[in-house]
Image (tube, rainbow, N blue to C red; front, side, top):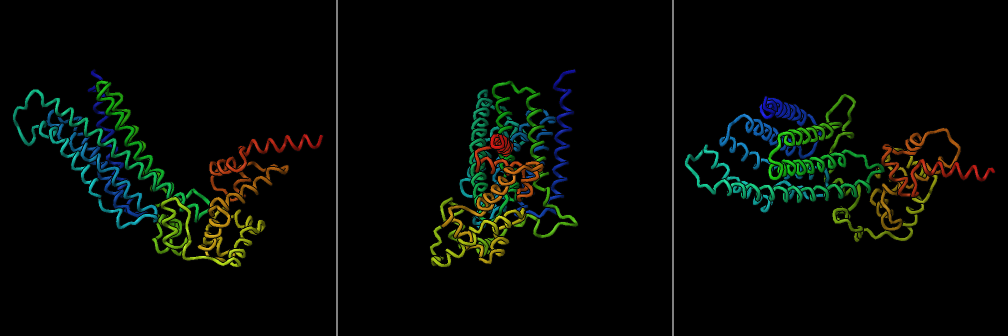
Length: 409
């Protein structure tokens, strides 16, 4: 049996399966506590249509299949813009009114893709049925190559924009929380993976077509891996956002408005500083020396601050309430006087507590000590510990044991 004919049922069944799973995820979106989920719904709808186009390309003979290939190309240009706008809804550090509408250059890219695939649509013979010249095939090859290059440039640009949003959200999170394992960052990471996978496997299929004579094995593997990553990312995006009996409103991914962010962090000038990466100026809140010293003394009270830091659920709001100060003033003193942010401030106290525990003869495992110190993730703890000490936790404990043995001798 010819291997191409043998692979057709497998490929066709795969696309139908992917389409049905996307339909299942669409039902999850209605229940998920996600902001801007309309864009994720549209993205899933496009992926479903693309899977259907892939199935039709397999079973519809050429040249009619060129029509579905053309639609596949145009739809692919809409994936990254939709994911970027969904990403805008995950973080409050952007002007939401400007993030929803497509800009002029974005419309230009989409319209350019439609123009570039027009020769391929004409070649399908669905709309116009007449003989084309001998060079028309070469012309189609050139326009499709330009279309692919345009797609690559578009995806790279959107990935850079999504990565910038992620970095801004990291800065905002470090101002408010003691743990970076928050839903907004997890969702943004998954969106970055989605866009990057879309680019990587599109390039793989393109190279397969240009240089490897369209080997069926490469096409099948690329398609399976792309949809596997897509569905895995969607699963983890929905994980924790679906309502359960024990889920409270505080545990869902609800993005605060700019007004509520003003009350928690400070003025709009400070939020703008998070977006640009520059230090906030606090031009409207010059604190007198006595007030600064009072807040600073509380922040330098090691015993009291360590007790608060060991609480894994501590946030800027809860921390400020515990020491009797406003969150905005705590942030200002941390940034201006101590040259740090809330996340790094709490992490430093946690690491110091871990160091004191590792220096003692203890039967506790390193992970148990880290969890007791308020860390919720082993990887986060290891990264923070090595950044502060230059050693891994295991290396530090071994060093302390060696030192203790040498002293006892």
